[in-house]
Length: 254
Image (tube, rainbow, N blue to C red; front, side):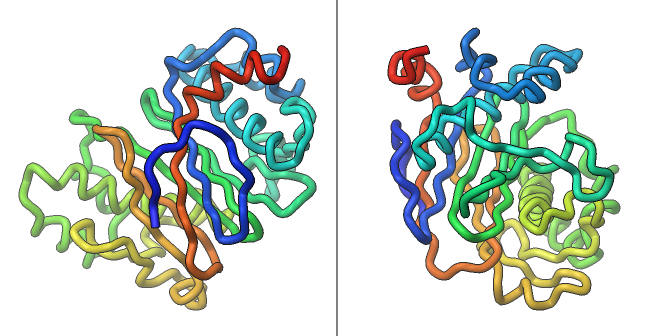
């Protein structure tokens, strides 16, 4: 179940999933002060302003929401980004204590962060860019069956259809922690005109019965998907992050 947008952070209960949305227009100068020293260094390393802002907002939303769950100041939330393969600080952000899992995604001017207790989670959002050459990408993303299903869609829906496939697969790969280490061709999901569902995952057949895949009600012009590994009935609540990104300045006494 997916609820309507809510404005404030509330306690994360078992089998709840909270999905927070914000825009690059929500950036405030004081957001940088909530980040860890390593995050601040990384933020300043981005050459493009849009990339820098999206990274800062993803960190800020994560820290503010987690601070409510852990009852500590946002800047003290223990988040690590150690890559399990090379041990450098560019891996998936994880909470180093507690049982909350979270996942961050952004595209164009939208940033989303999803939170859940105990279960692995992945989220992906993509802007429906009219310039994207999906025909050049589909062979490296879609299986033969998926390409056939895509070709059956009306021409005007094929770009968004391709991105539906893409976000479903990307969300799953983020949830497993594999990311781009595993080719999207190793995953098969339902067609865009059917409810989201994992059909096959190379060498991991147990995931078919133990994963939840959901298409999100994103902002106009975007496609989004959420993957949760394990769990039973999950109640998905969506939140507007714009409010806390502005009001937190007062409530946190920054």
